[in-house]
Amino acid sequence: MSRVAYGEGVTAQMREDFLVKYGCSAYTDEILAYLVENLAFQRGIIEVGAGNGQWARALSDRYDEHIQKPEQREQIRKNFDFILPYDDKTSLPLSPQIYHKHTKPAALYFHPDVRTSDSANSMLRKWENRGRVLLLVYPPPGPMALETVKTYVNVCPERNDLVVYVGEGKGGANGNDELFDYWLNSGEWAVVKIMDVRPSPGGKGFEKMFVLKRVRTGEESV
Image (tube, rainbow, N blue to C red; front, side):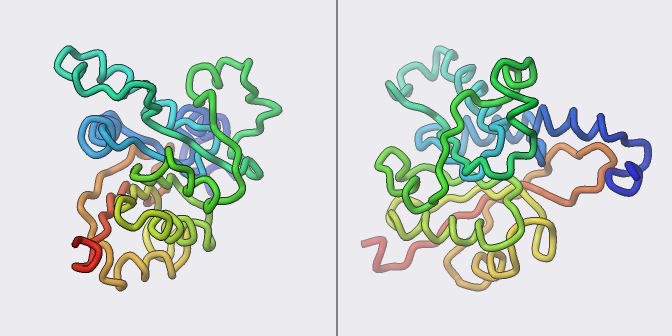
């Protein structure tokens, strides 16, 4: 059964260990460096569907390391949370009854403050979230990802213009066809970077990290 689900030689425990450290899809050092030091250093990130918060924790730790460099100290924003993770917590990949805040995996890999929200509209409308980069890591199949991206844009079209999507492409395990049609065919978005994620045990995943920038119309740019 494990061979069918996860790949040759991969046990259920190996898969769970991967989920504990990374979540459903795994970052790399190159991804963390790019997101923290290049793409979002001054803007910050809002993550919707953060799960147990593994990406948020890794990005937060990387940001804290980066701002300790002497050349970065003048650019530090005071009282600034680099990443604000949200999840409705109805279908977490790892049970909070087993992996609660007092366990070693939570202490090592989970973000300590994944905020609970069941409304993308209410969380994205908060002033502290405007202008941030939107991060979607392995969103569930269905309309959630598309609805979140559209809400992100509609709330603040002049500032909300960068989405980082980590997942499979059209026809894969994440989002729906309408999401990819919107990005590819609406004329509003351009893919500016694609990066490989860390392979999962067994190598059965097909996800990558895509960075998409919204192309503003002339009217919006005035």
